[in-house]
Length: 261
Image 1 (cartoon, rainbow, N blue to C red):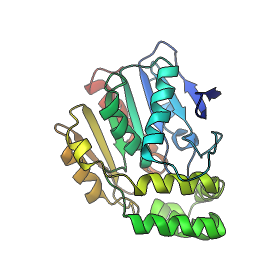
Image 2 (cartoon, helix red, strand yellow):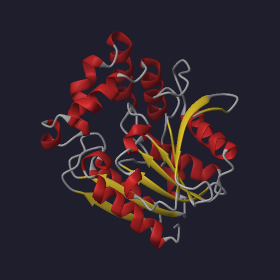
Image 3 (cartoon, rainbow, N blue to C red):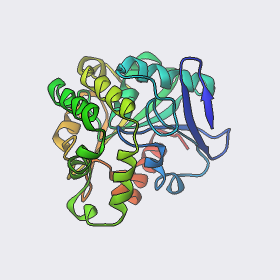
């Protein structure tokens, strides 16, 4: 469904009972809320499971680039307020995990716990992201697709037919949305912010992630007192795609551990 938040219209999908404990999912750069399709059926069906396309992606509105992380956090905050959501578990993948960190600092009433999947307090460096922006501005997503896929997935998965689906999803991302989100990531350093967080946190990494290596993800986990770290083997940047059963098992156990069932 399309939800007009005043400053932005976002595409949102809900599964599960409306009175269930809420879990909110935020997708990665170059993906849509379809990123979570394999996970949703494997989670406890008593939960209210909410997915949304962040700005510039999927069926959400595509404002002109650049974006800031503050904009992405504000979008999530406004969506949760619109849906009257409090005390959710926020599951963020890559840039979605950065949104989770920013929102947790800003609105602790909205988030009681978070899951950071293949996400860090700081991801990459400014020049790297500026190169990505310039490449997409010059030729769209197609010219960078193969290099992105090699960083996203394990070698074994790249040989499967399913890999083509994710390449198509990447190429289908609006150029303005991709460029805008790259700018938001480039301008974000949450080390100090994240080190001050005290909420329950599960941090997940993929052993073959070429975008956000496991050591980087573990470093972010170490910033958050009492966080849990899990490494999913035989998976790259999208373990929820390559190893959905293991990913869902980690989430379900985390929900039980914190009494969010």
